[in-house]
Length: 509
Image (tube, rainbow, N blue to C red; front, side, top):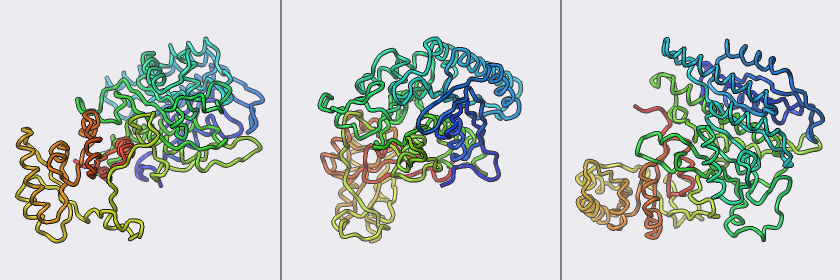
């Protein structure tokens, strides 16, 4: 699948400020692979050179800090970035230099906006992968460099992406449970970044330098979820729509879950993930700047921080699925393309301690191939009319072609009147052998014994918070969920509804 860019527009520009991996599996080499695969143009500023292969690192050389400054200033004068990915900053001087560059760029950008409202130079997104701990658990950064990173770089970072060990290094304490991770993310936010994604590639059973092979010592909840890689995202920013929170909004904290692969071919996963996040953010910004009557797809225009994290997790998961050994040591994550398969896409875990969520009533599409296995499964109608009053329900329920109707009640807030409408429509549908779905008002649907409920993302969050999902499941009712972005799709996957409605094929007015 290709990325949501077009041949008639310039691709977004993404910087990688990181070290060079001569083996090609991590560092700027992995970054540029990922940026290119995502349909963006990559530029690089190298913080250090390494002599390494798949077996290990044999040498490290850091160019003078002045030369890093020259690389960055040269790039910014001609190839202004839509997003910046930052990787290894192994010394205090490097951290201070990068922090100073981000400060200068922000100031110059603010000056441009003040003069002419220049949208071409909107502030670039900054994604920071804090390379501090090696895969084997060894420390790669001095304490004074870590302190400089927090003081000079964090204030300009949109999202920081530490793994478990790196988050522990930043916090100065261990993270042994999902609650520890959630509290750790909150504490990292308070250090000045806008958002944090604590990656779950290392399970909570692992400690620096070793893994816990004796799972008998772990809690029942952690043991149950060892088969998943669970990342925790938390943001200081308010929901996209004020007072209408979704379960995928970072302000409430989001657990992203994907299957864990038992593979040693994981070299470069952190570099790749952060580069894909930066690229996805750049694509979203680029698409929103395009006149939607000419170009721009709805899904791409809706890429914000949590969406970018979902896309990146899907990209890395697929890369791990296809991992191969190139040398005699562990192989790198494979670079594919903009995610296009649901098989690698993450889900939002409503409870990180639950091994599996229970799916809702299973349906099959009227357009699906017939299967002996699904002979007793309810078939969703070819057309699902969405109606707003009882009169239309009466008219369409008489048509032989209509097997399902969705009632969307608007301009009514009285619960008793809503239930009366739902009850009348349910009686009409039942008499005509038509299945009735109720939009949003799940309590009335449960009380009237309707076939199913359909909810949007904001109402899904309210339904979950009020215990509605359990009530709907207890009644063996069907559930449909609307989605308009990648993060909303991940949220729907986590709930496992009867069907998912995909909205953003094209931008809508």
